[in-house]
Structure formats: structure tokens, C-alpha cells
Image (tube, rainbow, N blue to C red; front, side):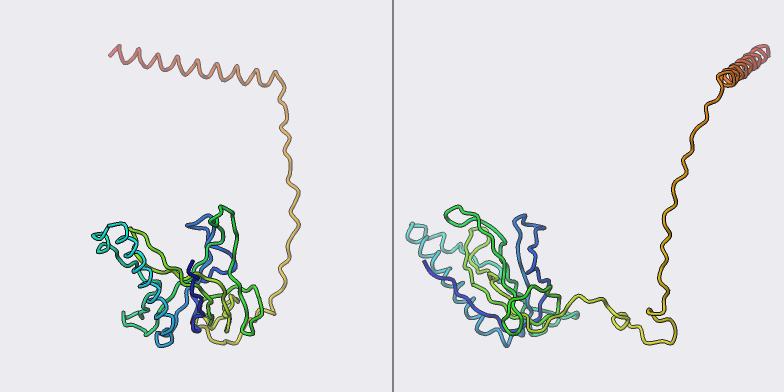
Length: 246
């Protein structure tokens, strides 16, 4: 069985890194991923290897179809979307960069039907293992494998299997300062001058105990209500008599 080619990407700027915890939004088993934007002029070796593996897989599928006598199906083989895209700026002009996406399934089953779990390794600039959140704009390199594939629906292509990430320059998720929003320095209040907030202890709720009324009072009220209702009904009947009398 042919061994997958493993490469290390040139340094680039990270986007939407999910390398500490897998994303389970579309796959409940979880997927680790990271996108890296790299200047195209530095991608020669990667692009050459991706093209070679794609063409090799294309030839492999074509030979299999010919061996099965399906010569007409060879012309139906199509190419899948590439594993990278060109980057454009706000005006629609190309920036001269390519964006690559690397992925790794967090779990699955091997050919023997055994369940496995895996995760990418993260190392610092010196190669020492570390567990850090990688924010957009961090400078990273990625160790990956090129995985050729073919389906009649999607076609022939390759995916980039994430193996490890080296963080050369880390952008962390620290709290933004006023500079991030365009605020300058002014004379006035400073945070360290703010008095400590005094929290009052919650007051005990007041319990209201309903008082029972004497039965005679309740009975009298009910009797009064009956008399009032009866009087109203009689008045209504009097109004009807006057109406018919007219």
C-alpha cells in the first residue's frame, strides 16, 4: 500500500484554528481544522506535490475503469475542487496569497472496525509541545499528509490531513484596549481609582400569612352579594317590561 506523502507548509497566517478542541457542529465525532494563508511565491513545493498526487490518483482510477471494460467512463472522470483557494482583497483584487485548509477527524474506525481517537500536536517555535489557543493572525507552520480520494459525485482530488502545528508567533485572545476601538488617551477617570462595589446581603423575604375571616362575616358577605344580584336581575326585568309596553 502506498504511503501518504507528508510535508511541512511554509509559514503563514492562521485563520479559524480549531486545534485544541474539535468542531462538532457538522460532524458529531468532531473535526480539528486550521486554515493558513501563505504567499503564493512560497508554495511551489506544496502545489507541485498536490498536483502530482492528484494526477496519480486520476491515472489510477482511469486504469481501474479500463481494466473493467468501462472505457467510456474514463471520459466522465472529473476533478474535485482544489484544497486551496486564491485570496482576494476588499476590492476583488488578488493579494498574491493562497489559503489552505487542513483537517483531521477526531475519531473514527480503522479497517479492522476498531474505534480510534486522535488529535493534532501543537508545538512552540522551539519545537516543545504546548496547548494554546491559536487566534487569527498567528504565524504558524503545519505538518500534514496529502490524502488522494475519488468519488463519482465529487471527482478526483486530494485533502490535507492535519498532523501538527508549530506556532512561531502567537496572537492570543487578550482583552482589547481602547486603541482597538480608536480611543485616545484623555485626562480623567482611571480604572484603578474606582471604588470597590459593595454587595448588600439579600434581605429575608417577608411572609404574609392570610387571616381567616369569621364564618358569620363570610356568610354575611355572600348574602349581601345574593341580594345585590337579585336586585339587579329585577331591575333588568323592569326595563324589559317598559320596552314591551311601548
